[in-house]
Amino acid sequence: MFRYIVNKYVLGFVALVVLALILISYTGRDRANLTPVERIIKNVVTPVEQGVTTVVEGLRDTFGSVFTIGQIRNENEDLKRQVAVLESENIQLKEYEYQNLRFREMLNFKDTLSADYDTLSASVVARNPSNWFKTVTINKGESDGVRKDMAVVTSKGLIGHVINVSGNSAEVLLIIDNSSAVGGLVQVTRTPGVVEGMADNSGYLKMNYLPKEANVREKQLVISSGLGGIFPKGLPIGRITEVEIESNGLVKYAIVRPFADFNRLEEVLVVREVFGEDILTPSGGGE
Amino acid sequence: MMRYVIMSVIFIISLVLQSTLFSHLAVAGVKPDLPLIIIIFYALFNGSKEGALVGLLGGFLQDLMFGQNLGMNALAKFTVGYLFGSLERKIYKENLFIPMIVVFSGTFLNETILYVLRLIDGVPLNYLTSLQSVILSTAVYNSCLVPFVYGRFYKSSQKGLLSSDRWQV
Image 1: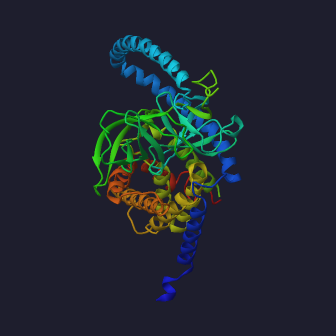
Image 2: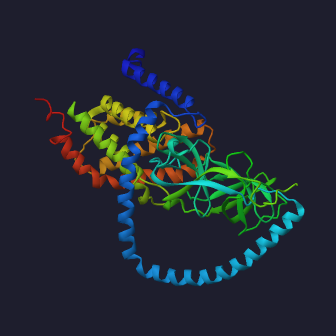
Image 3: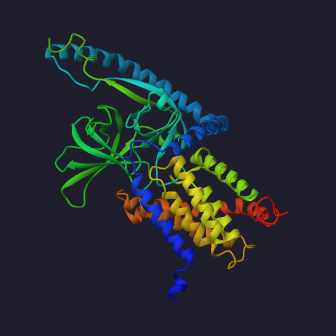
C-alpha cells in the first residue's frame, strides 16, 4: 500500500512542488534585479507585444469609431461646452496662482505640492495575462533611464510604480493591484490614509486607516501624500465615492474611484525625477 | 519532437495574444486564460506525464515573461496538467460538454492554487470575494471559450500537427 502511494511519479511531483515553493519564496517583489533569463526573454518579447498591441489598438480605434459616431458627436458638444467653462475657470485660477505665489514669497514658504517632474513617455505594450496580477509592460527600460520604484502616471493621475526593469522594457505594478499600497491624502481635509487595490477586481481603490472623526466625504479628491518614498507628493489618485466605518468600529475607510482608466492604458509617463523646492519660490526662499 | 516545437509555438502565441488582445476582452474585470485552456487540452490528449511537463514549462515561461514570484504559474499549471492528464483514458472526448466541464474544474483549481500562493505571499485576500470576482468568473469565461478552441485541437491531436503518430516515421 505504502509503495503504491509513494511511487516515483508522486515523489517527482512532490519534489517539484517543493522546489517551486522555494523558488517562489525567493523571488518576491522585493528582489532588486531580474534574472538574466528574464531580461533576455523580456527583450525579445516586448517588441513582438508592441507590434501586436499596435495592430489591436488600430483595429479597435477603427471599428470602435464607426460604431460610436453618434456618441462621439454628443461627447464633442459636451466637451466644447466644458472647454468654455474650464477656460473661464482657468483664467480665474491663474489669478489665484499668481496671488498664491506672491503670498508664498511673503511667507518664504517651501512646498513640494506643485513640484515639477521630469517625465518620460512610454507606451503600454502588454498586460499581465493572469487575473491575479495587475501589472503592465511598458516599452521603456534601463536604457531610457527607467529605474525600479519610479512612479508612473497618466495625464489623469497616478497609475502605479515600476517594479522591475530590463534593457528596453519595464513592469509597472498598478495601484489597483491588491498588493499595492500608496500613501494618500484627502486633499481638502489633509487626512492621511493608505490607498490599496481592492480584491474584488472592480478597479476601485480602498483608502484605509482614516480616523473615525475625520471629516471625509464623498466626492472629495485623494492625492498622493509622498509618504513611503516611492510616490511623489501631490499626484491625483481619484475621487471618493463612499465612506464606511470599518467593522472594528475604530477607523473609517473610503472607496476611491481612480481618475485613470485602467482598462484603456495606452500612453503613460514615468516620473524620473522630482524637482521639489525651487519651483514655487524662484526668489530663493529663505534668503 | 516536432510536436513539442509546434506546441511551444502555439503556447508562445497564446501568451502574447493573452497579454495584448485578450486584455481588451475582459468581462467584469476578468479575462480568459487561453494558455491554461491549451495546457488542459494537451494534458487530456497526452496524459499526465506530458501534461505536467507542458504545464511546468509553459507556466514557467509565463513567470519569466510577466511574473514577480518565479514559479507561481509554473506550479499551478504543472499541477493542473498532471491531474487533468490522468483523465486521458478515463473520459469520453467526443462530447463537447466534457471538455467544458474539465476546463471549468481545471481553471477553478489553477485559480485556487494562485489564490493560495498569493495569500502565502502576504497579500490580504478574502476567499469569498476572490471566489466570486476571480476564481468562478475566470472558470466560467474559460469554459465558454471551449467550443471555439476544442474542435481544432481535437482534430489536430487525432491526425493533424499535434498528433503523436504523424511525426513518427
